[in-house]
Length: 255
Image 1 (cartoon, helix red, strand yellow):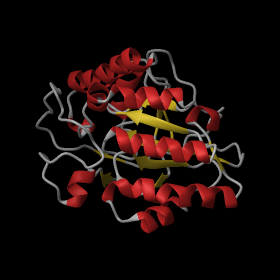
Image 2 (cartoon, one colour; image 1 turned 45 degrees about the vertical axis):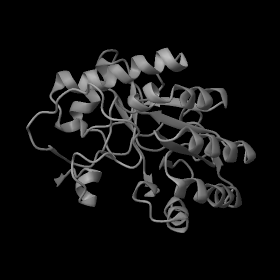
Image 3 (cartoon, helix red, strand yellow; image 1 turned 120 degrees about the horizontal axis):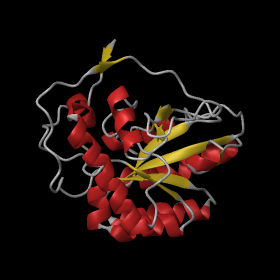
Image 4 (cartoon, helix red, strand yellow; image 1 turned 180 degrees about the horizontal axis):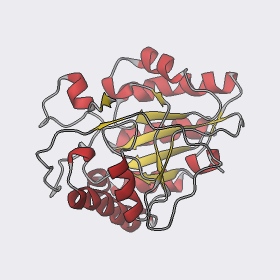
């Protein structure tokens, strides 16, 4: 079993410092428990043929698609300045690409126009918790509140609770996070098999190389709010097109 390391811990950043990909303070966020991060084994890859969940039961984790269609899902952590969101959406329109944005609740509160721009551009929205905490360290009640509060903000701002939930500060969802997502009404959590590493601000060339690991069915993790992501995106889209891969929403990928 391997310990689930938070991105802040991996970068040696103090817990009080906000992630560069996050926007706004964790206003009225639930208080995390004092317990340490639990350990978990890497979950099996869930394919498009096994994504049903029992109503009211735990959500099912989906990592990538297995249909074989030449498609990928570029998924973005939704936070950051509105200007960067505009730039990303403009580039996507130029390449006729669709994405899924997992909105952070504090971003929805501070910059509601960002989510509306995503929706109006024909893209998809999902739930990425209210304040992007180390979610697994929370007790069940506050954990559920983080998910439900973002769900309700999405419904108010964009008219949808989002099709998918994505856990914060972890590539894979834990059993506790899956249970909470199910209680909040989400049948599926969408994890990812490719990390662009744009949240580390390594430069456009490095982000483009990391995203190059995507293959048919891949779900790629990216972030709004980072200038390097904007700089890397044209090359990423060009590379995908050269390989015959079409960027689609997560729902389209998993149809």
